[in-house]
Amino acid sequence: MLKDDPLWVLGAMSGTSMDGVDAAMLLTDGEAIHGFGRTGYRAYDPDERAVLAAAQGRWPDEDVTEAERVVQAAHATLLSSFEGVGLVGFHGQTLAHDPQGRGTHQVGDGAALAAALDLPVVWDFRSTDIRFGGEGAPMAPFYHFACAQWIGAPGPLAFLNLGGVGNLTWVDPRHARPEDAGALLAFDTGPANAPIDDLVQARRGMPFDRDGRLAARGRVEEGVLERFLQDPFFARMPPKSLDRGAFRAMAARVADLGDEDAAATLTGMAAAAVLRGMEHCPAPPVRLLVTGGGRHNPVMMRMLAAALDCPVEPVETVGLDGDMLEAQAFAHLAMRVARGLPTSCCGTTGVRAAVSGGMLSRPRTG
Figure 1: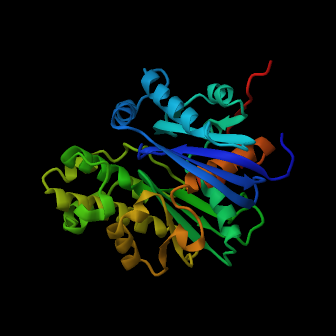
Figure 2: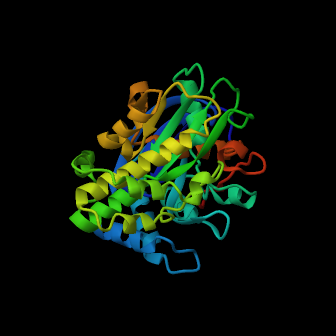
C-alpha cells in the first residue's frame, strides 16, 4: 500500500471504439487531482483493428491470442516512451461484457506489462466489482467526482462519455467522498459511436463519420428511432451497463436507408438514449460536460443541446482534456487501488458495498 503523497501515475485506455491506445500522466493521491502531465496516443493500424474486431464477443476460453498480442505490443510501445512514472493503470481492451452472466473480459496481461516496463501495474479493474454484484461498469465516475471538485463545481453536474458506448455520470461534488450516499449516479446510456463507426466502415471504408458530415446530410427515420427506444434496456433503472455489441440489431434497422439517412438515424438513436438516461438524474445538473469522440460530432451535440435545459459543452470548456479523460481516470483509479481506496460503489455500478477493484503486479526483481 502506498503513502498518501501524490504520485505521477500513467493511465492507459483502449476503448470500445478500438481506434488506438490513449495514455496520460496524472499527479494524484487517488483522492484529488494535483496536476496533469504528458499525454500520448498510439493508433491501431487497419490490420490490428481487424484483429480486435474479430475478437469482439470472445471469452478467455476462446482463442484471443492475436488480440492479446496486439493490445500488449501497442501498450508496451507507447507506455515505454514516458519518463518519471511511479505507477501504471492498465485497462486493457474489452472483448466481452456480460455482468449478469459470464462476467467481463478485458484482454491484456498486467504482470507481463509490469515486467516489460519495469514498473508496478494495476490492472483487471472490473472483475472484483462484478464478483460483489456490480455491473463492472462504468469505472470512470470516481475520477469524474475528482474532476468536479478540481473545477470547483458548486453543485450537481453531469459528465457524458460518448465512446463506442455512451455513459453518464451525475455528480454532486458537495460530498466529501465519491462513495458517500448521494455523491454519484452512473450508468451506460446506450450505444453511441460504435454503430455509427461500424456503418461507415462497412459502407464507406471510413473509421468514423468525421465531423458528422454524413449525418448532417441525412434525415432521422422517426419510426426506427421509436422502435429503438422500446428496447427493455431503457426501462431498467440504473446502475446498468452494456456490451459493445448489445444493440447489433441497430444495423438491420437502418439497412434499407441510404448512407446519410442511416448515419443520421444512428446518431439520433445515440442522442435519444442519452436523453432517456438524463431522466434518471436525482436533480437537474447545471451543465452537461461531454467527453469522448462523440463530442467532435456537431450533429450529435446539436441534438443534445436542442433537447436539454442545461448547457451541453465539451469538457475542454472547463480545462479538461476530452481525448484523455478515460486514460487519466485509470491513472486515478490505479492510485486508489494502490492505496486500498474504493473504486466503485452502489451508485456507480450497483455493487453491494464500495469495493477496491484491480490487481497490482510488480516487476520481477533480481
